[in-house]
Amino acid sequence: MEFEANFHMYNVTPDRPCSAYFKTDVFMPAAEVFEALRKDGFKPEHILWLQRKPTGEIFLTFRSK
Image (cartoon, rainbow, N blue to C red):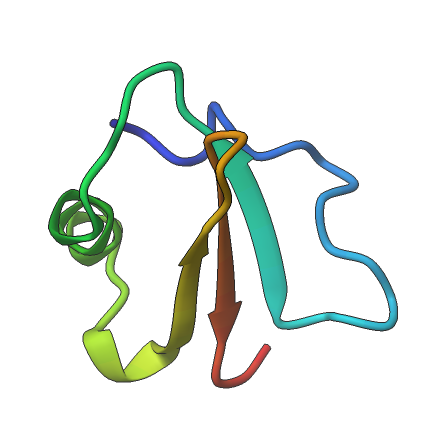
């Protein structure tokens, strides 16, 4: 999965500059999310938390901008 295709250009709001969200069409286990992020150059220590909503949205908060 390529994250760039799923992020909206206005995804990050000024009051939460380290947060982003996306929605998948199918259930994606956290391990797959982290693996996709790793392939895009993110290390586990870059990510502060991952939260899955019942609506299928996944919220990510990074440690820094």
